[in-house]
Length: 138
Ligand SMILES: [Zn+2]
Image 1 (cartoon, rainbow, N blue to C red):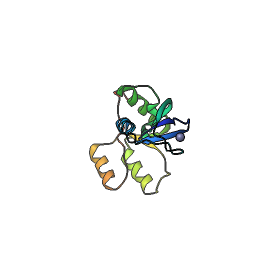
Image 2: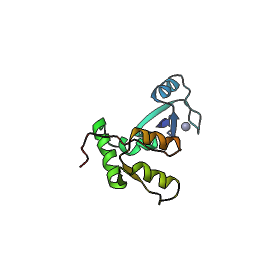
Image 3: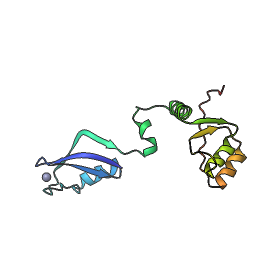
């Protein structure tokens, strides 16, 4: 979704929400965008304060202008390292203990085999693979 600040010929300002830029452009072209106050179709777009609604998960990252994939991975990795507890090779065991309430709920990360991850997923435990930027674990 994309939203634009619009203004009609009578200087009414309102926000128009469109599927994407093309949808906005074609509706403008066909005179389908009307002012909600006076129904004027003489609409112009105000260039200040338009926004693109990114998916919530990517919002903090999208504020940075054009980070490359490597930078994004570094940021995710850095975030996880700061905010998640490293349980090392006990990952699968700890994840299961937390899931079944045997251990306090918290964010963890660690190493796990492909098989262990598959088992966890089968048990309904949501495991998110941690992207690796290639920085070595010490
Ligand atoms: Zn108007």
